[in-house]
Length: 387
Image (cartoon, rainbow, N blue to C red; front, side, top):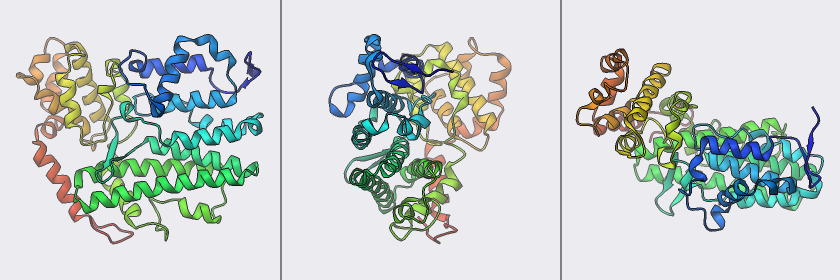
């Protein structure tokens, strides 16, 4: 198939930007409804997408750097939604190997460094905070690390060693930030937020590892040794907390934080950034917010309940959907019975008589205490550490 050339002369290898905007509108319509605050430098990427949505003809004038910027903005906007945009390989590798890269590599690398500090707080609910300095960590850092290591590899290939070092320095700063957050949560004895942070770190360093392999990096290189398999293998450059956290994730969280395929069905969840999914299994507040929301009709809430139950049946060792359902039901005086006009009787009967409801009905204190006690007892098989 012939590659499309835009009016600007840019040869487009990936998804057409107008189609990409449609994909964003499909999964994050709230970006274009005016719900989000898009003011300020750190949120300019959100405003860029809004600008192009209103000025589609301008897309024919873009070059490689601007297309890269649009793809980054698209992925940052949707990485916390139910259907993230499929531009991962473009921003990690494909665009760094474009035939015009030599003319654009410096600008793209500087943009990658800048994107490390973009404000994504409104477009994800999968977050953890360091209370000492309010630094935030999410799965967005994994996306950033995967783009940054692609930038680093491209810069090395094109003998841009000074800029490559700049990118490397920010990669190391991100790893240090995550290490400090985990150490702080342990020092605070904040079991629940540590359990929230574990899958975020595992995701982020997993993304970094995958793209290092994708670029065939030399694992014996000193920089590679410093950043590869951080959640899996002890590294002299970092505290053992990273490996401990990786093992905690495997033990407690990995079954919970998958792709949430069942939650793609109720499209009403895409209406608002208020409905973005949090880190499992600690989904009580999310369920309560859904139950109380006046942005959702009873029919839509019934659809969400069905998706919770379907998701649990697919993954019955994951309890986040049960917790969200239970908290949602507690916002209705009659509980699930209030949904009799909106759901099939046999589904309601099955829900009422399943382990799903037993887990849902457990008090939040009892549910969290089970995790707190289990984390206290857990001994890391690699480091011998306890929480």
